[in-house]
Length: 330
Image (cartoon, rainbow, N blue to C red; front, top):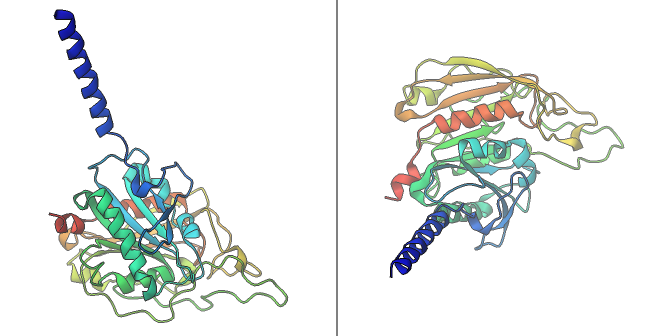
């Protein structure tokens, strides 16, 4: 009798431990295998279109995350964008879930809105809205212009906590574009660009009026000068602009526009290389929002972001208030 009781108790203990281990098993988002670095093509079920999904391989159910929808520029792709703004390298440290979608026309339009909305809905449903600490739109060039267009829409307005514009236009007062900005004209007889990386929007949409944090990043050679004021900072009663310590990168970014280097221009962007970035923050903003500008010195429109400045942008993003999706899920 005693032996049977001991055996039964041991069996229950093992079963309980197995159940606990199973409960703590990492999530597999969207049935997409998690890898340390490789892109994970994932199908959005309703449209049948794919996107790239990155998340921590040890992500647990119920763990708070910051969700980023990372939009490429015109003429570019999700694969290029994933390396242009390589937040994937920060996914473990800052607990990021990053979706990098594609436009089949290589330029975003209203025809893609349903696809983008479906990606967000599917990921949030699996993570659980109460576990999305913050949701950010990030976009390079025309992807930034698209983020600006949709950020206050009926779908995104109640969900988006922040907008990171990567050479995609500044809210709160736009800088003047530098002379010579735009894609360079190839030399006579040169092959046309093979890897375009996103032209800037022809005309910006009106400034959005809903509430969210905003970070603007640009290359020094794209603009004449960075504005010293921000109407968004005034709106959110931020304190005067402060300059943070420069971010110094000893490693180059991962991509550039290799099809526009014959000749290249400093305004459009040359080869990847190390660099320094200036960081300006308007502190103490109402509601914990973050309003900031980051200017990468001696860089143009298409050099991929270096590792340290990428982390600085991510740190600014996760320092901002969030919770729109969390509150809507209660």
